[in-house]
Length: 173
Image 1 (cartoon, rainbow, N blue to C red):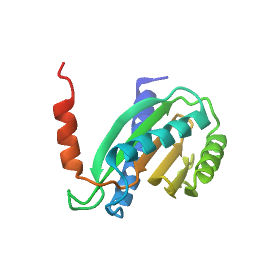
Image 2: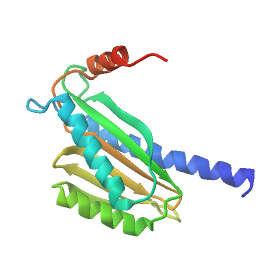
Image 3: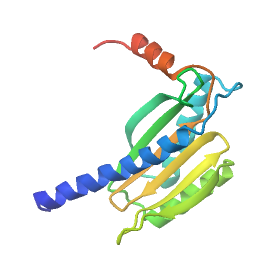
Image 4: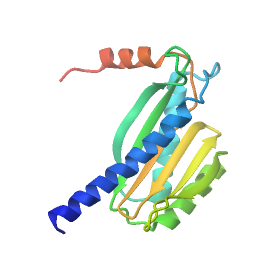
């Protein structure tokens, strides 16, 4: 593979993850504070469903972004969600088979799904999910990289305060 080709692959792989993040950021603005969900439960739930999703596809996955507290709405104190992202480079599974497996898992979990694909000559396949134990999910299946982005249910609290709490409780190197 030439340097130019590998640069193009890296750019496309990054754009796959970036597309997922942009799509889910738009969904976050629709979230309202959840009076009955505790932050720890929201985080545990999204980690669980993202991990189950990756197991349904198989292969080795890498954490792109640890569960991160985000505001449910424009107001910082109107609840928080956790966004968790995993990626898989050079996936061993056929993208169409992976999308089908993820879609079935999510439906079994009570998540409403919608398949999609990009309009490129070599389309990237995907499935979005909403409801059930999540605010939103996105699975992108490109032959070069898969990604799973999960956004938890909205929980009580402030994302700003949660990030401050985590930064002060983290051990320093």
